[in-house]
Image (cartoon, rainbow over all chains, first blue to last red; front, side, top):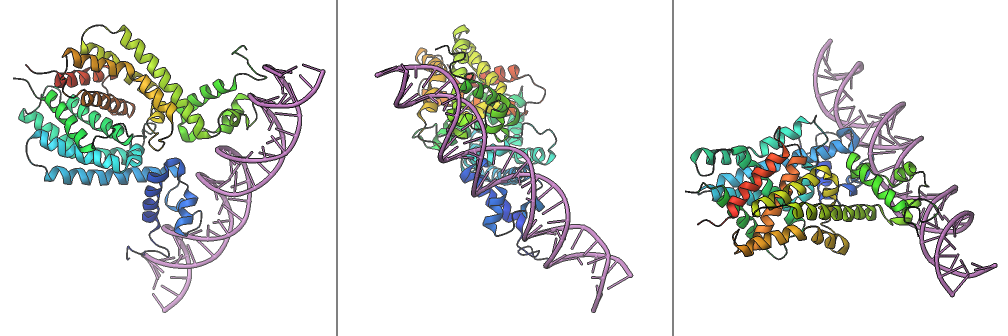
Length: 198
Length: 198
DNA sequence: CCCATATTGTTGTCAATGACCACATTGTGG
DNA sequence: CCACAATGTGGTCATTGACAACAATATGGG
């Protein structure tokens, strides 16, 4: 069972996902066609249907895979981060915004699942991806580094800022400023607001 | 030249936009079909092509119209708002997030124009829609109500927070909390961070 | 070792869609 | 009053997503 060439063709599922991700990132969801994928991979026009019942199923799989990668990057970035809360939060923000600007279409895919209450995989992947930053915020709340009265609100504000920053950066609305500068500055502003005033 | 029934049929363009907006909001962009619109409006399958050269042209027109409405709502809301900076900013945030949750697909349409450098109408409508809140922030910076060293950064943080809040709320990630509570709380956190500490 | 069986992929087909074409109808202005 | 442009119609084509029937391949029990 060599995973490089398991069945009578290549590992179609993986190759489909890879090519689909590249295509979506380049041409958008509207520019993605199952038949086109099959054509470029040299298989029949119906081979994808064996692995993904639906075009939406493929998009969902893309979103889940993207969330896994994002989670890994966040874990790594936060693992390397040293210093206080602001430094760690900045590290998280850099990784998140970096990912969001590298794969904007993928992240949009993740955030476009508002009409599907029955999709446990996506929800689970989402929670797992953000486990580390949530733990970071909760830890900071316990240590008294940030206001601790409403940790939920704090987490929400942080996520909102980063999500919004990513949207603004990918939308090209930051002009000449460098993304890193914008991220660092915005996080600084936010943390100043979250710090208890003595 | 009665605008209610100008030519030999109704004012197709407006009706197309209305129906398209409802359809997009209900079934998403993928569920929108020019032929379907024509069918439901009782015209030939090619009538829409007379007003919109392309499906994308119709989507662009939807985005521009949405931005105009959003601008009007923001102007009205900020016009009614009284009190200091935080009260006015909260009013702005309520209107914006309210709009974003009422027309999520429409707002997503606006934010999805990252690949079109040559679309002056959208850009102009965008700037016009956010003229009032930008003025609010600039005014507060001049009055010393918020840190004035980098008004651009402040504006960006505010927009980021609201955009992210809207995304989170429409994504159903706020659980049982009421949107108004979340908005007010988040804005409060943000303003506390932007206020100069004495 | 060999065949039943599920997995995987292929060919054929169908309705729907977006885009284009030539053409008809309606309103406007010279 | 008539040319002309604006608006809408019908026809057509390639592409697409989805489905059904069928073929090839790998797996597992006897």
